[in-house]
Length: 533
Image (cartoon, rainbow, N blue to C red; front, top):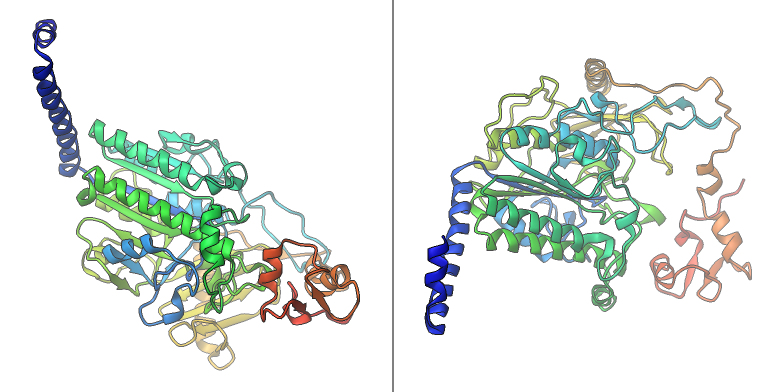
């Protein structure tokens, strides 16, 4: 080595330039060799996991037969490019209607019901206004549960998790991730503002650097970008907001700041796609885009239309989400109507990476490889998809529920009212026509299948509240109409709120003033018109 350096030192400036060029080519060739070694080995995975994005939260049409299955205001050109190169899953579901249980389920391949991780946050005592007592759930990922990251590490992969963790349990490092941001939740980077709103671009930068380092090392990788977007609070770059302030609003999607946050997220997706291409690993890398649950419906937003309900409920708006997968052997622009769920990703990645050892018999997901490669049908371990959310939420539709989907039929069980509701999703995606009374036999058949499944996975069920008081007033009932809003805002008591009376942000006034007449009428109030007591 010393002799080689001495020879180079004696060369002329011109020769040095020539040698420098040769060395550069050698280094580039070396990188390409490492990349080629990756291609010959196991595939890479880039998993973009979005927070609270609804089924219609992008400009990609989620169902080719439903024109209203994409946003009428948001713009996501990079996701459109991703969709053109991959499979769009029209019937993709999150394992739960809230983030923590969905994240635990996706990482382990097990349902929230089996994990007993069914809602975020601490265990709460039932109030006197609640008929049921929610079970004592886990709000963390147990260390004994085997994650996809742990299995991939044993198979020679390097792994990373950037962004929102929200699973406690010691953070990503305790669950198989080599590189990570720590035990993060909704706050911290989740409230960053311009120029790095919600750490969208920070997460992306770290992920891109990780991919580059992995390629140089010649090791296959799994990197998960768990974005804080598009969860509240809404944060976006000011330049992007200005774009949508000048854009005609949609019928259902209207908020310029929310649209801007969505577009900033989309820009980051484009940055990831560009990096994969620049590294020369497109033919050996799977890119997965998926949301942890449906969008919230705060302030009567029609965020999930044409779906019913939203986050923290088992109506379609709470659990049907956007999902796209692109990669080697996948035909671009293909739609799949096969019902799939987040914990299917676990066995899918295992099959693609030829991992067979270490798989628990408790894994409930089914590999999607047959769908990805040739549009084939799945042979599930269990034909039904079951959702279990035995908790009260903040909204009127957020009550203890379980649901089961078999084929085109969906049954929702409401533990609070004791009601069973049956819907035909092929004909009634908005779940407006309850078929339970006209189809009692089918309703009971699905109910028994639901109960059998919950018993099989040892799901925790809500119990009757012995301290229930039918005369007690819940916080939902106190704040569930526009009375409080009007008593605070309507200073001249004329039954409407003007701009001068409104004390909130200007953009919120514009959002509530649906007919743009300069006033917020009673039926435009955040929780509907005031009700008589």
